[in-house]
Image (cartoon, rainbow, N blue to C red; front, side, top):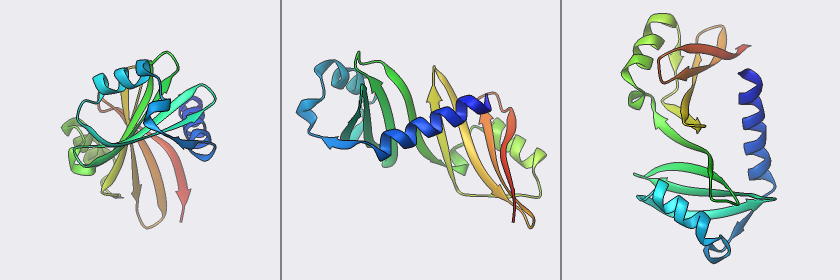
Amino acid sequence: MKKLTAIFAAFSLFLLANSFTLPPDIVSAKITSAFEKNFSLASDVTWKKVNTHYLATFKINDQPATAAYNEEGQLMSATRSLSLSQLPLNINLALQNQFPEYTFEKSVSEITMDGQSNYYIKGENEKKIIIIKANGSGYLNVENKTKK
């Protein structure tokens, strides 16, 4: 699972680093239709393309988000930023119970792929900085640990 996360993160960075903004009329109707169906409340939409993938950057409920589509209009992944308080209750409780000695950043990243959402939460204490991956069931896994 760590390899999948690393691959997705690398792919996302590759897309962002090697892409350019497209005028909305260059994106196919199939892709824009799928996007509008998935994210009907989106605003400030911009599109980028790398090879055969299209990346939409937008706001939804004033929160930044991105969505990646293939040329067939299939949603490959979506990300958004959340506040720590917006995490599902089971994840907040698990964080408090399993990592009481850590202070967590107020911003959390949610990544949805293949219908599954995972949350990435950064925490730190006097000695370490950790990145925790949480799934919707409240299972927590330390993805990265760094000494201060």
